Length: 166
View (spheres, rainbow, N blue to C red):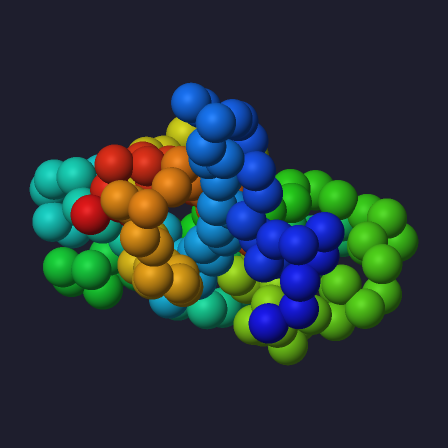
C-alpha cells in the first residue's frame, strides 16, 4: 500500500479529539444498471396501468423531408407495443450521420442512452419505475471511523440512499 503524507490512501485525518486523531475514510460505490427502467403507462390491451420494458429497437419513419424516431417499448403483461417519441418531424440533416445510422442499426449504446434519459421520458408523459441494478462496492467498516461515501452513476436515477445502504 502506497503511503501519502504518512496516511494510507483514501483515509484522511479530520479532527483531533482529546489528543486523538480521527480519520475520515473515503469510499466510492458505483451503480451498474442491468436494464433500463420500465415505463409505467396505461395499456389499452390490458385495460390497466402496466410496466412497459424497452425492446431495444428504434422505429424510424420518413414523412416527405422529415423523420419521426421512436424507441419501442413492450407491455410486460401482453406484449403490446408503445412508441416513445425521440424526435418528431425533424430534418435528417440536423442529426449527425453516425447517430442517424445508430437509429437505423438499433445501436445498443444509443438505445440505452435514450431509455435512461429522464428528460425524454418525462416529455412523453409517462411514469418511470426503478431499473434493475447492482452496487459495486468495497467492504466498509462502519465502526472504525467516519466515512465519506461517494455514489457514482452514469445515468440520473431515483434510487434512494436508504435502499442502497441495505
